[in-house]
Length: 232
Image 1 (cartoon, one colour):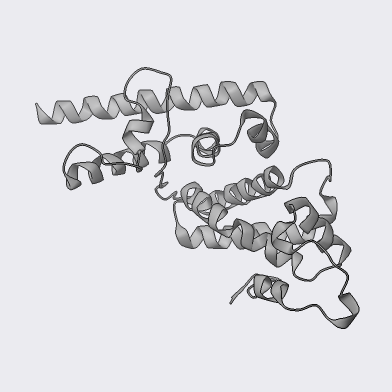
Image 2: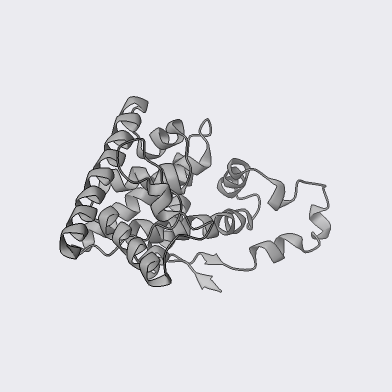
């Protein structure tokens, strides 16, 4: 059982939701696992179901932890930021705008908590990117560099070195460009979802993503040129 700071726990939520209701609550209702995120949060705010928050938390653990690991470069840090994120969700639940979707709001908080973590840790750790990332600029495609859905050409050592190089290049990018790459390519968010998450205009999303891809492309070309020079 994982206990969140502030007394929240991540355990038994699903199991408790499946138990038979008490005699006083035999009214037929939608199972927790079939409710929308927004409905679960509303139920939590209203205090109608003590398991709603547990269901909501468990629904995102497998999605958010990998994202935060890539954002912070540390699984331990990701676990801490995850807990801080859902503690903030719990504390700020009543401020949620019901006209919005829950997921972008969740990521807004998670990204802000990730930024807080970076500010507290002057020495950034390597960002781990393992999903495909594409570019419309010159040079190698990030999709080719990072694709893990199929075999990459070369020996195991060559593949490991290439992935390590990509991680290093991405980690050295400015944080605002690294964030938008993660949200767009790893989390596969749309422009509108990224705009909601980062709380920036749609036009800024497009220009920042273009800048991020171009920045990666230039840095990667410099890296490749340096390697070529060393091997000559």
